[in-house]
Image (cartoon, rainbow, N blue to C red):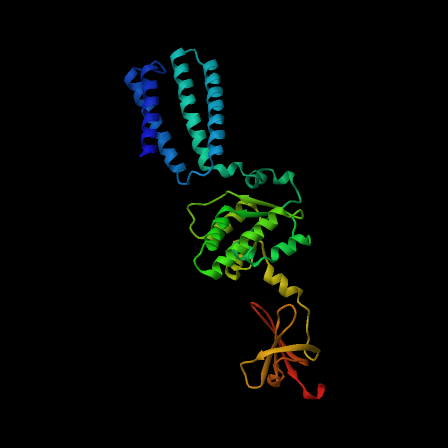
Length: 329
């Protein structure tokens, strides 16, 4: 209701200016009618801009002052090129009303234009060598990103979108204990990243209200910033690459760094539990790789030498299959 009254006041003010300050020597009713039409067009444009929510107060303040300055400049320019004093006065009043109004709306609803990440896009040619890495929820909760940053393997600027931060806050406030713990871990990871001296991390206010899915917002943000997505989400990984976006998947990195094991080699494994098949035991390497060992169920709780028979690569990592030979004891 408030915005409707505000619109009506703006239309009334411009229409009154057109009536009392007729321009181009038009009759007062015609001048008021044209002014009303111009105001209606501006209101229509404003409704298109209002698709986004009000977010940042200081953005509206900057936009309003910029509008006042621009309206004053345009009024002065027109005053110097016309001899009609009434028309000149109307134009100055028109600009001094409309430009601050537009500046207010733009500054409020498009506050991301003042975000450092957005400004970087305009001058990225001058900032060669710098790149943006956009984090999603899965990689933040995972936590290994902090180790990569601390060791210097991640360069550039980490971008944490505001909508991802809101999602983490919702998870951290979840009534489910496990989800709440994961959400709080994610917030601790972000706090560590912001305090780290090895990497620069910023929170981006850029949002896309017309897009509901978080994954789609991340893809659009990566396009806007010409950045890379850092994720552990397999589906997001595939969709982003279909859109031509570079993806850094920490799980893929971990798999690539796991030691290579060839059939016929021997390794020492601690048998932790029984397997699914008869007389199978299961153990794990230090990096978490599962080792399924035949003829080892009775060796649960012991370290044994295993001969590798095959290695299976899955979407979640490697699985090693081996055989326990009693003769090797």
